Length: 146
Image (cartoon, rainbow, N blue to C red):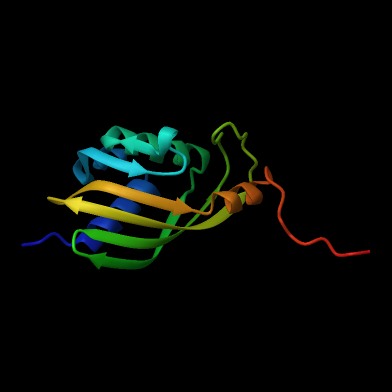
C-alpha cells in the first residue's frame, strides 16, 4: 500500500515544526535528504541533522511558531504545500536580537518522498516581509508627496 504523502506532510509540519518534536525527524527524513532553504549555509541543509538544525534555529527564535497548511497538492512522489507561519520573535535569529514582534509570513514547500521519508525539499518564503515585520528592514511603502 502506498504511503499517504499528504498525511506525512501534515505530520511533519504539525509534529516537527509546530510542536518541536525533533526526535521524529529521524523517522520522517531520509539520511541523504537535501533540504533547500534560504537560511541554509550554501542553500542546503543535509540529512536529518540538517533538518533538526533548521527547525531548531527557527523555533529558538520563534518559540510559539505555528505553521498552517492552506493547500496540499500531491503529484507522484511530491507534495506541494502553501503555508502561513506565525510566531513571536523571542530569540536571536541570524544575528538579529529578539524584537518581541509577532510576524506572519507566507511560503511554499515542495517535498519529495521515497519509502515514506523525505528525500528532498525546497522552501520559498517571504524573508523580506519577515525582516520588515521585525523592523530590521524598512518597509517599501510609497511616501505621500507634501
